[in-house]
Amino acid sequence: MPWLHLADSLLHDPVPRAVRDASGRLRLPVPLGRRIELPGRGSMFVREVEGPPGAPTVVLLHGWMASGGLNWFRVFEALGREFRVLAPDLRGHARGQRSRQFRLADCADDVAVMCRVMGVDPVLVVGYSMGGPVAQLLWRRHPDLVAGLVLCATSDSFVFGPIEGRALRRSLAALGSVANVAERAVDVPVAALRTVLGSRRPADFVAWATAELGRHSIHMLAQAALSVGGYHADWISQVDVPTGVVVTTRDMTVSPSTQLRLAESIPHATVHPVDGGHSVCVRERFVAPLVDACTTVASRAIG
Image (cartoon, rainbow, N blue to C red; front, side):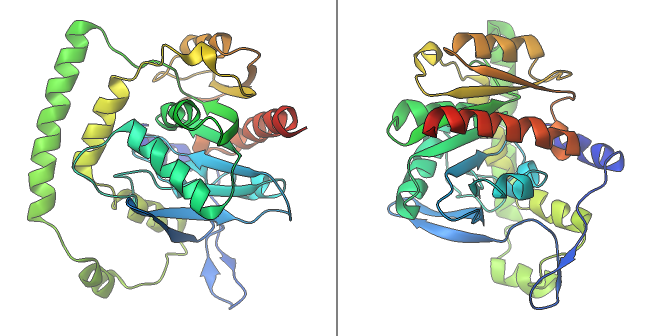
């Protein structure tokens, strides 16, 4: 997802202001996160909104170069009125697990283990851009876990033509190798960073967003782009859970026609348009269509 456009987007839409918590300190209205230990897989950082007692659970899966906080900061409050909300950081992104290789299937399996450890299955899974394939694979690999899907600004196929594909793979492979060396060269222990930067969470949104972006693993981002670029779900028509597709109608990254084709490929999928491009999730007008898609799918899945 083109987070280089983040600053421009925010200039045209008010960002969340800091609020005072119970202790009187200023904090952003983005839920704090915690680490969940995944047996045999390390730990996963998850932001959580408790929601009403007994509410169904929504798992939010972010896009490329985003994080659970960055991708979903607009919708936490609105969704939290009706759902328990979990927003993990996926591998290589922000506080997500580090590994030598990025695979979309590994991300899906991470989320499945997280849900089982937290005891929240079945769940409604929402995927944005790169998070869309992860959500689809979560249904494919763990069908008992997924009660419904909401797919936003995404597709069931990101496969390029043979010429473009070879060029992209070569470029990303080179970028990943260089980034891996660079990251090792500038590796700084977390304790040292905390000493320099302090342990307090920024109350200013721009400072917080900048810190989130600075936590990414560059070489894993390159691998993630390569993994997404080769994704193709020729089984998508087999999806048998209620599904909503949030179509970003002015998207130049994943065309609206591609998103509509995705909706047509899934039996009985509902379409929820939002006026905006691929980064519309940082805008206030994204909230209503996303909430509508989640409540529609939840009503069909849960009754």
